[in-house]
Length: 405
Image (tube, rainbow, N blue to C red; front, side, top):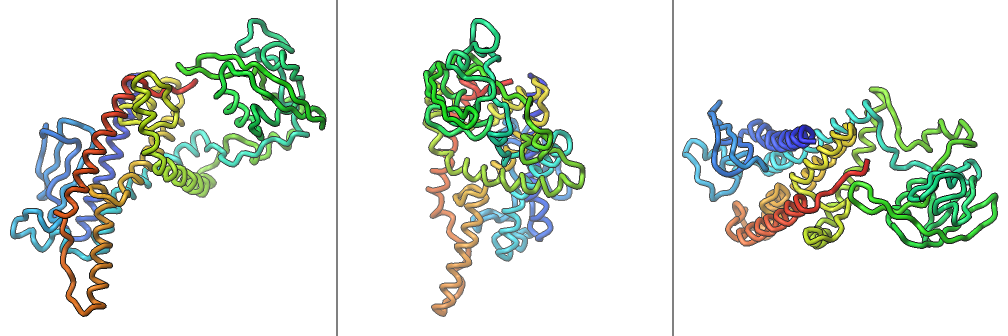
């Protein structure tokens, strides 16, 4: 696992470097002065000057920065750098520079998704459940958690579930696909739940006592059923609508990758919105509460998950997780609060709107925004970010997320 952790940590570092490289290159193309380009924070470990820019490595490799001269009017500048100060440039150039970092994260994510599409295929997020009348779906012979094996035993067998039955609901929750069934049952270890079946067109209700087993350090419920392809017509098995993974050639992977990226961006935005509400649960996990699989992770936790994926040989998952992390980094940096890129973009648009209103009143432009007034917000966001980071990093050490394999 150590190799996988190191490789994923390097992947994160490359993602950060590319983010900052995006800022730097667009700033240079826009005529701005780039003074420093560093990976990490804290004391300088190594640096070299090339083309008027100091490149270097800091002691704490948890980020990086690109120092553009005059990002605010309060920056101290050498006289020769004054005309190239960022705040003096056209508003669209400033926005382009600020967007370039998150854009690089998105481009990297797209490249990783395309790699997965070619090498392994992409998860079909719209997979259709096999129709009830076209499947011999449920048999009671997997004996999950049972003392003996054979048809008719295990929780499903004891509940009277027969081969060919189609489970339509568990514990009152509709089940439309095999993934639905797995999700509902796994979340109820040791519980006794009502199960509704479709048996040759007749609705049958029974009660099943789910077993409990530990998978990857987490308790999972089991019903003792399996999905069988026996009896499913070949046209159903070959229909892409019913495939959990879609595979592509080099050309077909292009549109599929963009569609998948759009779906993942939507999921990332939803995750970003729910991010604050998940922090209390992460804090509770430090003291023994169960850690949710979708809880936020730090660089430490992300590297651990990547290491597990590599250890299991699931390189597709390794790449998908790294791509998803890049989407989150891009979206997170667009939050409209300083010191994030989105906060600086918001300031640019504030200046434009303010000056437009001033022109309507016959007044001259108001000049650069007063960043000193934003200092309390910036400091507050920074302190909050450090506090959240401390909670998540601690949870990643004490109660890490484990992949099930």
